[in-house]
Image (cartoon, rainbow, N blue to C red; front, side, top):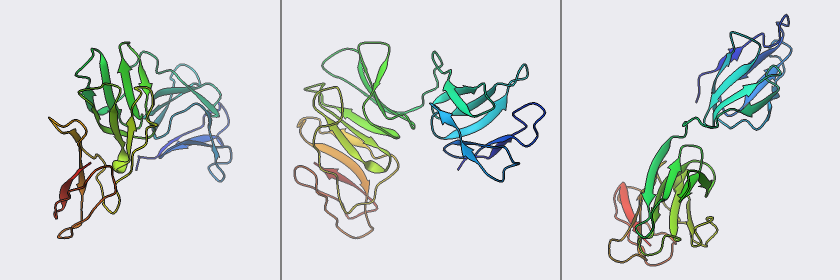
Amino acid sequence: GFPVTIWGPVIPNNVRTVCITGGCFIWKSTDFGVTLTKSSGSIHADNHFILKSPFNNDLYSGCDGGLFKSTDGGTTWNSISYGIASTQFYRFDASATTLFRILGGAQDNSQMLRNGSSTFNLMSCCDGMDNAVDYTNHDIMYMCTQGGDLSKSTNGVDNSAAITQPTNVGDYWVTNINIHTTVHTTLFLEVQVESGVLLTAAVPGRILVQADKMGWLRA
């Protein structure tokens, strides 16, 4: 969870109006917090704090999407993050066949692909975790979001390629992905399994899971 931040009054001479955050969104109240209305606009989820400008009535929120600003007392918010390097990455992988293709798993900002430019394109949703770029074909990429949800790209543009999810296994917040060093069609996923119980998973290819608290799936 996040620490709860309460800022008020957000409208001069109106002590009834406050903004509250402590989770995904920012909420505004005009009756001392008895009822709350979710703020609108393009504000990113997971807001951590609210601060008021010492020079005017503008409000600023720091969230997983960077820095956002409200000029109407917290009713609507807009990003002012352009040019600010605020994205946090869990993991990266780079192409072995072409320069400047980098795939990064970003905290609450999906899997992000840089392909020969200074910008990143979104490849998935949610929290981007580990990933792997096929060392024989840079358009083939594997990527996970939180909890081990697995997706695949075969066109280097999106993650719409078909891939079967592992079943009957628990998994970590960050699930590790590795491509076999000599057989590029073999993919290894690090997963959590029940102690002392052999589990199988339905993913392409044959599966080997160790009877341990941590094992590797071979796809």
